[in-house]
Amino acid sequence: MAARTYETIKVEKQDGITWVIFNRPDKRNAMSPQLHLEMDDVLDDLAVDDKTEILVLTGAGESFSAGQDIRLYFRGTEGDPAMRAKARRASNQWRWQKLSTFPKPTIAMVNGFCFGGAFTQVAACDFAIAADDAQFGFPEVRLGVPTIVGALRLPDRVGWSNAMAT
Image 1 (cartoon, rainbow, N blue to C red):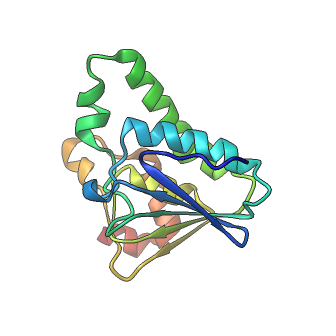
Image 2 (cartoon, rainbow, N blue to C red):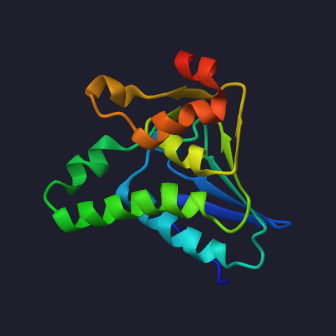
């Protein structure tokens, strides 16, 4: 597979392990339409890549992901319904469908913030490992729009008592 470059993610390979790194550290790796499109694309490629035996998903800098980039994902696509639909489709596909059925083992390595919609991809991975400084939260609940997949899968991943403390 030819090496591709992306704007919002980095892909690094070593000894059968492929690291896919959210690369928007200045925005705490908040997910943008561009990131969703790139992740959707890269997971298709890595699913059939002979050099990828294990997929590790993590974030550059101090955070795994602060969730959706509200400005870019919602407000940035207001005037372009086609782009909003494309970004929504890519977001749903890669974060749940593709990761939860990925043909190779997947590991979410959570560092720093993992907020809102970012928990969906953590829940979709086969394993999740959190750093001591990892912080999980669903701030969108205050807005009345909880992350359904994350909220439903959280107790499965961290246990009921830890889920209630989030």
